[in-house]
Length: 66
Image (cartoon, rainbow, N blue to C red; front, top):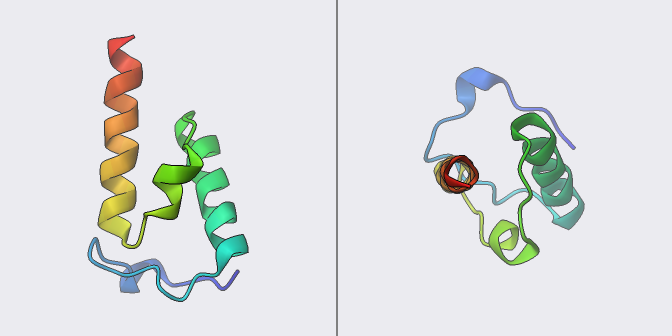
């Protein structure tokens, strides 16, 4: 997976240049970093950095309620 300088990543940045294996790697990184589990249905619909952040926030809030 190609690395992108953090200075070029914005909440609205698209993940459109990622192939399936890149998305799997991104999702696995999210799961490891935040201690969450992303369902495949949810992770396949992520297309921007903002959507990723929103989904992670939602799952962390859900886990906090349990």
